[in-house]
Amino acid sequence: MTPEENFAKLGLTLPPAPIAKGVYKPLLIDGKHCYVSGHGPYLPDGTNITGKVGVDLHAEEAKHAAQQVGLAILATLREGLGSLNKVKKVIKTLGMVNAVPDYENHPYVINGCSELFAKVWGHDKGIGVRSAVGMGSLPSNIAVEIEVLFELE
Amino acid sequence: MTPEENFAKLGLTLPPAPIAKGVYKPLLIDGKHCYVSGHGPYLPDGTNITGKVGVDLHAEEAKHAAQQVGLAILATLREGLGSLNKVKKVIKTLGMVNAVPDYENHPYVINGCSELFAKVWGHDKGIGVRSAVGMGSLPSNIAVEIEVLFELE
Amino acid sequence: MTPEENFAKLGLTLPPAPIAKGVYKPLLIDGKHCYVSGHGPYLPDGTNITGKVGVDLHAEEAKHAAQQVGLAILATLREGLGSLNKVKKVIKTLGMVNAVPDYENHPYVINGCSELFAKVWGHDKGIGVRSAVGMGSLPSNIAVEIEVLFELE
Image (cartoon, rainbow over all chains, first blue to last red; front, side):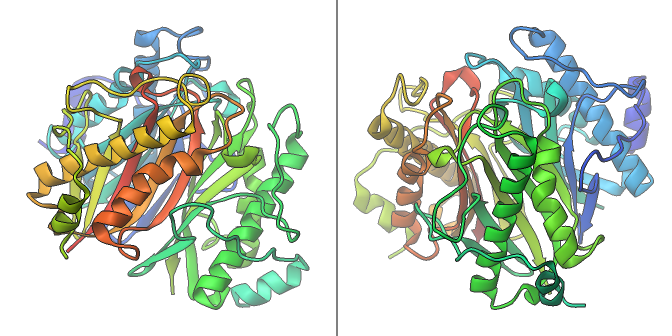
């Protein structure tokens, strides 16, 4: 099964690839590496899932937001590379949760993105290293922001 | 136009290259890559621009602080590499804003650094991937901290 | 002296390599690079050092916690690579302190880890680039989290 076939099986809908809202590129290819900018939980209607995790969103809602970030990243990959099949594996993820100061369940939240990638690229190649941490604030009060380093085929 | 010529045209003044205040190197060369440590908004007089963005600094002041971080990074590059011309392009920027919990304009702030790099290395090579996020706190209460990965010529 | 010999001289005890508590790998080898996931201050008894730096932990306690993070990373390296001697040098460290909003001494805290690495790999190869910053929150309220990029022999 290819990553595109794996994704199709999930029955999930990709949002459009988000437009950069600052002076940056959504992704950058550096040899066999593909760096992806921090993405938010971008929805098909062009809005983002917002709010502080731990007060505005509970853990399940925040995990769902992280999955939506993963979908936005897939949209950027497909737009920038032509196909998810161009990606060989996940190297590194930085998962940033817009959480209240006493929040403790960041790994559970970021699993929403990591489990999606594991389904698309498989349990070995779809899982890389990761930090899942709590930010003081995020742009436009988005609930989760994630940046990823992939290896290309 | 070379990066050094582009920079000269801007009429901006570089601070001295900041001295490391901990157990780290200001930059490290790894093959064709140059990693730069987190830099603050270091001024020619040896102080930093400090304060919480959203209460002590408004958006324009914070964007100016981010430009000053960019200048400090240029100073480190010139000291470590001899010339800005040794840098081929910007790969990745992590822009960290010392903001209040409800702050939302991090991308606007970090553009202060990214726009500077775009002027020095041009609109393609000077713009890479980026995350612009809000930290709970930063060393010595500096307003902005930025780390960058460059590719060398 | 090899890194393993340098470490033995310190008389410090490694915790067991921490088990991943999410969908990630503790380390990932990518050619000559070894990426290590964010680690906490994991103790031999399987607990972590927790609390907000600046209120629950003072600077010395937090620096000690950062050293414990460094020991947990060494445990992961030894488990994943077989020996600390497989690592040639430290390239990049992201040191994340779970601090109160007005905390200012992040570099001092993260030196607890960086000084350990400098003793193991020596003053040149054991010191790389670094950002030492304050997070709004961290998983399970751990006091410090650190991720590292190493170069392999």
